[in-house]
Length: 517
Figure 1 (cartoon, rainbow, N blue to C red):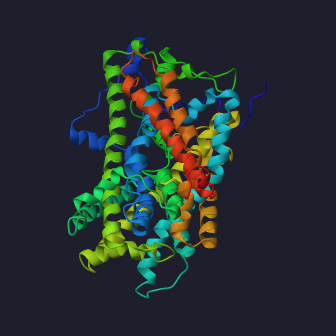
Figure 2: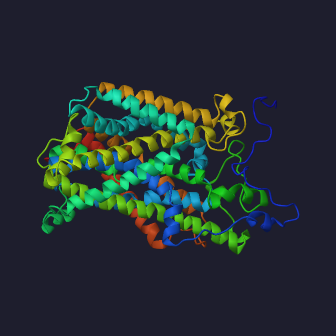
Figure 3: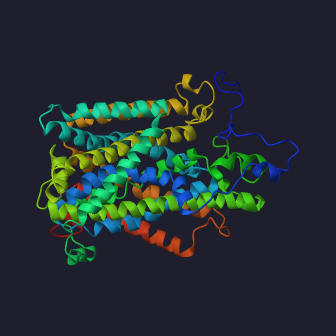
């Protein structure tokens, strides 16, 4: 079989930038010659956090700034119970994606090679390709709405929403492609901390009565609230589909087993998986932890724990913030339609009416920081999943795989994973702006994007869980505890039922199951 002259003949590994161990080292020494277990004190943990915070920042901009105020402003406390429900029964759907990545050194997208004829990868490629445009539009329009309000209300300039979306999206794509996001990331994180503190302080200005929280236990969905309910289930804390992005981010972080996987394959502690010759089984992703030295095993386990705690911490912060914003929306906004291009102004009134007009600038700064971060991470993450699907489906793409660590010359090969990532990003940018120009109402676009995210969620939830059960040795510290397995099965069943309700609601068919709904 002839070799494509464009293909690199000696494909560098993802860890090719690491030092090479001396030849005289034994096999175990070659694995852990430069391995040092990370510190896990609180200060070090925060320093190590990354993919979990990215996941939270991908959801907060639309779910917390648009979806939750819409629920509180339109329906008061009626949907309060749905917030902890969405978090609780999606928790392990996300968590299992982190578990798999840090326990095997591979991503969920890689594991989908084990499905018959790779149907899961085709499914993700098709559905994500379509949903990417609406999902990006839903996140981009939230950031555009903040700038629209900031410049239109005072009479500075009267530009349509899509113009702001074009500017924000263009800047975001430019920063991502130039690789200069680290400074922006730190600024956005600082802004997010400021706005979280602001929401907490405003909450205590006029806290709701304690008996209002009895609605945590009162299940009620007003007939006209089903689309908002579907959005809440779909986008709190964010869509389950974003777990695929988080898994790819964990892989790109190159810590723990994602860093060592290639070494383990070379030394026989893990299988070198051939995705295109013969069938792939989930068990092929298993790592033989017994071949690892105590130091290497501890190194891998600590990064595994850091990855899981990263998600847990970020999810708890997101949940607390969601409840606070829901409370503020009921106290300061209800009753309100919260719709159209002026929606951000109604939400900003929470601050101006409770504290004073001087808080408006703080809110707009924080809201823009959060919404900018959300659409920014989506611009990077969703095309990353599309390109990951292609590297697992097409041999030619696989030979040019890698976004951060692509082989020399990859940028000149149009079908390299790097360029597929770039092309997908540009398509999502153009498509999102076109959708915003056609439907310039941020609340409607966000709600539809949220509901569509729910369509594919149960399948991704199942794969995240199933791959962990089949690829991680049961007698290892990486395997989920028995109670986690039971709770995850229950969560999957409940979550799937809620998704079915949401989809029926979207098509006005909920009355088939719930009379008078």
